[in-house]
Image 1 (tube, rainbow, N blue to C red):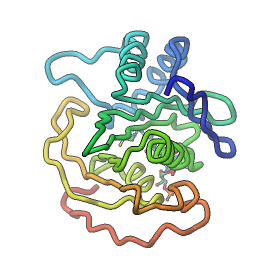
Image 2 (tube, rainbow, N blue to C red):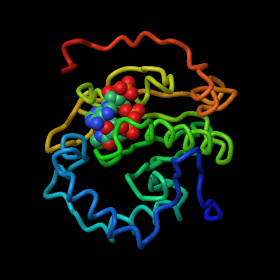
Image 3 (spheres, rainbow, N blue to C red):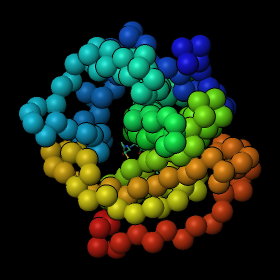
Image 4 (tube, rainbow, N blue to C red):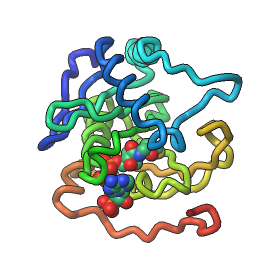
Length: 207
Ligand SMILES: CC(C)(COP(=O)(O)OP(=O)(O)OC[C@H]1O[C@@H](n2cnc3c(N)ncnc32)[C@H](O)[C@@H]1OP(=O)(O)O)[C@@H](O)C(=O)NCCC(=O)NCCS
């Protein structure tokens, strides 16, 4: 995995995070608190750390342990966000979870769906993962659009699943298995072959 340098489509690149990215990530996260806070994981047992050097060290430790693949997202060669592949399980489960954010200055350009598609294809084709999951708060309309664009399946609702913005929040669970996207997630999306799915969201949970 350490040979992986970068994956690219058009203006969007994802590459492994490096220790020296910590300062850029700190600047981007700290200057966009209002944008990120409603969707950011928090520590249920105390305050949340903004030690970005330690965060990057932790992510690269997960990479070494083959538990995660931490990417930064670049748009036109500038870091604009992060995409983390986490909770990798091998063997008879062979699954992982993806999380992501981008800065508001580049929102709405399709950067995240491109980054997610690149990461999903990599996990399916190179790592041998069978199922990729993405968990999203019902209120997060922008993130729901990301999985809708790529045609992930809605599997259900995990109640009080992740501690976000200082409370345990429900999350919709979306997933795709490798055999559902034989042509690849990116190819299926950019060639307009994502099937039309009617998502059965619970209206009471949405904004
Ligand atoms: C969710 C997020 C990653 C989407 O990234 P993106 O690269 O903007 O994705 P897209 O370009 O596909 O846009 C997705 C939706 O965002 C919304 N959007 C577009 N421009 C926007 C803007 N300037 N501001 C806010 N939302 C916008 C639209 O609903 C869009 O859907 P559409 O293309 O059907 O109109 C990004 O909004 C973000 O980082 N939000 C804060 C952190 C977060 O929510 N992370 C995900 C947690 S599950």
